[in-house]
Image (tube, rainbow, N blue to C red; front, side, top):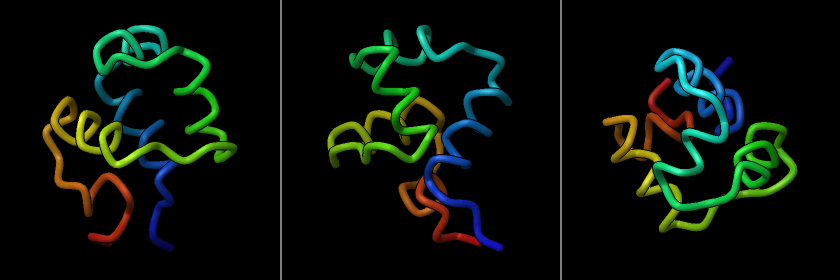
Length: 68
């Protein structure tokens, strides 16, 4: 099964050993938004997806689970 965005985001964040608050600060959003994304309750904007991909040094395909 291909990981969804919310699963992939949580996995990337945990692999980097950072909390939601630290990630939020790094990409310029609130901690609550990170939580909503990881729980699948909200979807990020394209700008936020790009910021996340740059921060984690992954492609957008990888971030959203399209690379298998």
